[in-house]
Image (cartoon, rainbow, N blue to C red; front, side):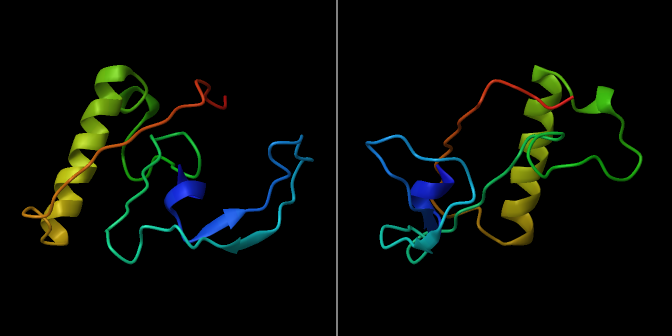
Length: 100
């Protein structure tokens, strides 16, 4: 998703097999950044997201915990950035794994 909407896109050999990283990045002429507020969120413990403060894994690792963390983040983002009246679209993707 980030490669489709974000400011940069990785060059691949698609539809042929693409070799492993590193990839060459180029500006993405189809980026939605000029007309939208894009906010990419990783679940706690996935990607670059980490637990900070007094939280522990049991506060975040689980379906209900994920939902609560995402809801709290979205609520805070909309409040701090005064974006409650803006249209909202929620998109998601998952690779179905979590690093241990």
